[in-house]
View 1 (tube, rainbow, N blue to C red):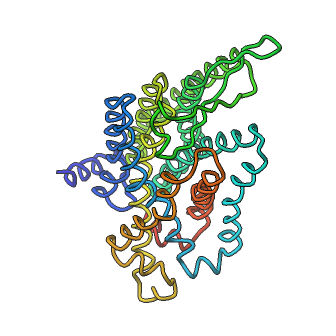
View 2 (cartoon, rainbow, N blue to C red):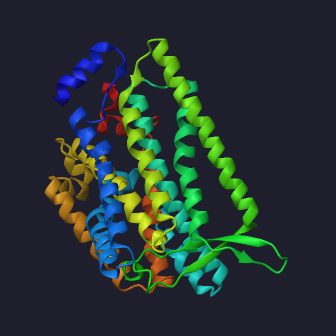
View 3 (cartoon, one colour):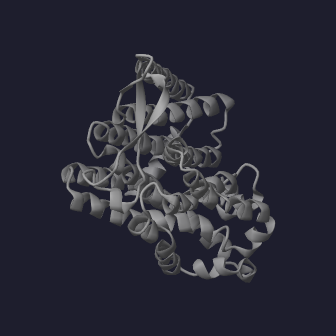
Length: 387
C-alpha cells in the first residue's frame, strides 16, 4: 500500500520523495518513530509525581535508548582505526571534555558549578535541534531542494519552531526571585539527569539566575513567539508559491517537520507547569532523537564497514558485523556511562561533571562528522550520490 501511494504521489508531480534509506525505512525510523516521544509523554503525565513510575521511565530511556546512541558516535569514530588516524586531533582533543565538569566542581564556586550544569542542559537541547536540522538538510540535498530562498526560510522556520517552546519551558520551570535593586529576576531550574534524582520529591532543585529581569524575560518570550509566527507564515506562503508554480514539494522534509515540531510543542507546553517537568522533558524529547540516530548510524556503518576492505577499520567492523553485535556493544557501553552515572555519581558533583563528558563528546563530534556537503566518503556511506 505504501509503495503504491508513493508511486501515485511521484506520478502527480506534486512531490519529490527521494528517501535517505527507502520510503518504508524512513517512514518507520525517521518520522513515525516520533510516536515513542508521545508514548513516553503519556507515561510521564500518568505517573505524575510517582517516584517508581518516573524511575522506570528514566531507566528504560537511559539504558536502552540513550546510552547506546552515544556509543553509536563512538562506533564510527574512536573504534574506527581509519578515523583515529585522519581525525586524531579532533578525537583525542575532544577527550578534554571529561575534565571540564570536575575542574569547575573543584573550584567550589556555586556560580561556576551551577553554570556548568545549566550549560549542559542548554547544549543538550541545542543538540536535539541540530539533529532535526541535520535530517532536514539531508532530505533537502537528497531532493535537490537547495534554492537559497528555501534554505533561508526552512532554517529560520525550524530553528524558531523548536526554540520558542523551549524558551517558554525554561521560563516556566524557573522561579522568579527578587534582587537587592527591587527588580524581579527569572531563573532556570537546573537538573543533573541522573536516575537517582529523577523523582521530584527526592531531588535538590537548583536555580540559576538568567541575568535579566522577569519583564525582559516575558518580552523575549513574546518576541520569539511572533518571530515564529512570521517564519511560519513565510514557510507556508513559500509552499503555496511552489505549488502554484507546479514546483514539486519535498515530501520527506515536510513529513519530518510535521513529526518533530508538534511533538516539541506538546511536550514542552504540557510538562512546563508540572513539578517534574525539568526532570522528565529530556527522555521525552530525546527518545525520538535516539531512534533516528540509531537507524542512521546503522545505515552508515553497514555501508562503510561491510566491504571487502573492512579490516582497515579495526574494531568498528566487528561492532558493525551485525545489528545484534552493534546493539550488544551499545548496551555494554552503559557500564561505563549511564549505570555509574545514574546509580553511583552524586548529583552536581565531580563524578556527575565527568560523566557529562560523554554527552559533550557526542554533541561536539556530531557537529563535525556529519558534514555531507564537504565529506565525499560520508556521502558514499550515506548513499547521497544517488540523489
